Length: 289
Length: 194
Image 1 (cartoon, rainbow over the protein chains, first blue to last red):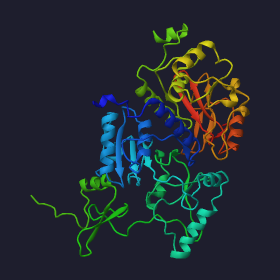
Image 2 (cartoon, chains in turn brown, blue; image 1 turned 90 degrees about the vertical axis):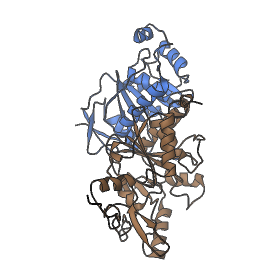
Image 3 (cartoon, chains in turn purple, yellow; image 1 turned 90 degrees about the horizontal axis):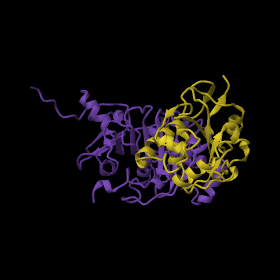
Image 4 (cartoon, rainbow over the protein chains, first blue to last red; image 1 turned 135 degrees about the vertical axis):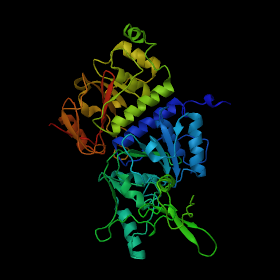
């Protein structure tokens, strides 16, 4: 079968209209989860079916698409989603954040600040921030309707009571425009301050059939307490490849004797810095001519 | 010529020539203006009898058999109803049942009869497509989500939008269409006279 046998961007037009209507209402009520009729995609749930459907509904032939998985452009999930849209939408792809007009992401916000004209599409596993506190959808809907978020603060308080600090490290709940409590998807809490940016941010949960959104410059506040303020934490190291002291780091085990290194989770950010001549503690020795 | 045929009452013309791609471009414009209230985009590709290009493009991009449309007086011609029946298939309904409503600002009133969603499902509300003479980035001052500091847009009034904003998270959302120009005002935007 030729690739032209697919409709542009894979989905049929009626499905795209349904997703597009949900996206517009999601932008009109920032942080609120709009139900949508999620379709089966040619990949299993948990591999970004929600994000893929949102990306498919947004793409135009003029777009340049970047896909990252935990910050990396070269992992299986990112490579296969990029190839999927190269085949079905014939869009250009890139690994450079600044060149991309649409970025689909699994669990990271790129280090380079996003700009007007860019769309960031998140893959979301569990869109409901209250789900692990209250399993019934009928109840969580009511809690959002009544703005009844005390349970979430109890959960964060119990973190402090047990561990001395809020130990939630990822999927850290936020309040949007002072109204809806929202799950920012399992991004590290280091990325939470970056949720306020100039791009359009769209969240798609395929299995859970929910879409939500943040318009540019929307006020997003990480929940905390006066005496335990929110802290965007990261590993206390510099990147061992590019030397950056402010980026989010992955810990990599290098041998079975306790050896380890820390590298930027954002591969494009790290490679760009290395190309500019930045070096870290474990960079290979320079070759001299 | 396409436009002339539409004006002559030929309802079979005026749709997208390449629907997947033209609808994708039109939606990006619709998404962009809804995300950034006050921003004006230009769209193309559709002509319907008696309404602007931008309104016709919006209807083709967002509406189908699942979206009841209300046509306000002035936009409820037989020709337009036939065009909608052929190209979109959406049922034409009373204001109270509509997911989309099309017309001039005064013709769309009274505004309190439209669906504004429910406390648990505030998304189940109408989207108004308001036909206006012209759209300029001047006039009323806009602040709110999607706007870094403030924006400006030529709007017919402030009171209706202020009352709608008080309903948040319920309320209706608006598109404004003038010829091929498109702007939007979600329920979150605060509208003030300059």
